Length: 234
Image (tube, rainbow, N blue to C red; front, top):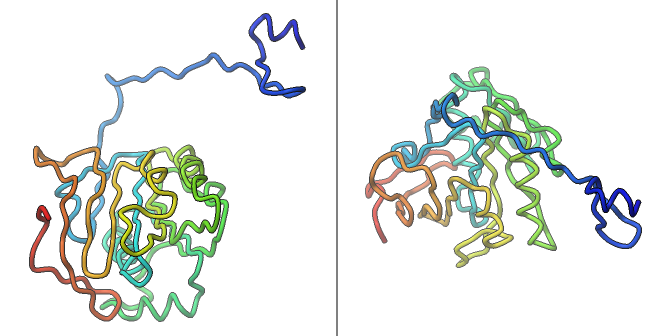
């Protein structure tokens, strides 16, 4: 083992523990890459502010009962005709799904997506080329680990995207895990009762910087968003 360490094949991690040295890196082909932006329709017309690219992570950090699930179900409704959508729910079973969906102006047999029950290890079920919605990523202690959990989901993506909802305590700017949740996110949206705020946006859809913009809204019947203000600086 000592000889393999000296020759650079393995590296000592701790007493009696080694890892193989991986010296291979994949080339970044920025010339021939397909630079098509994902055609996703968002609540509040976020697509006019932020572009989502294949393999991107989106984080929705929301207070309890602030409208996270309503936001995500509207995302399903507006995109299920043009994308394969998987919805991984950690808290809604069949009866609650039905109760939520019948509030929309759409017959139940017109909903075309894949609702799944899942509470953990979401990376194991991610569909690489689809829209993956996780409602929500549960964590109850060691909140710093949320960055690694999001990274595991990111590593499974190819041409698709993952929209991950996490809980946010009232008055906090970030969801559980703090800034760890920002690391892989290309869009980080904060949702509070009656207000949504763009905390982080990496790929602008125009020359206007959307970071820090917020919008006031009203949520009716648990599914319909109304706003009169549009996105603006606080």
